[in-house]
Image (cartoon, rainbow, N blue to C red):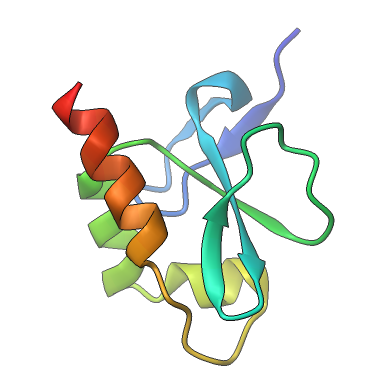
Amino acid sequence: MNPVRTCIGCRLRAPQSSLLRVVARESELVVDETATLPGRGAWLHPTTACFQDALRRHAFGRALRVTSSMDANQLENRLNRLMDN
């Protein structure tokens, strides 16, 4: 049975296999490919709409319990590449 997680962008529940796990590494948001990096993780649908919603709502900071601003460029570039394919 596949675990269910909540997307921090749209707040819908989905199977873990259909979401990306995002973690905070220093001051950057990083995609955790294998879902094994240490620390808190946030789950996100691999769409730019959910990404933009999460940014607008400041959901990354709350979900990851980070108070400083996070650089989301790497994550945004990755999502753009996924949408292009």
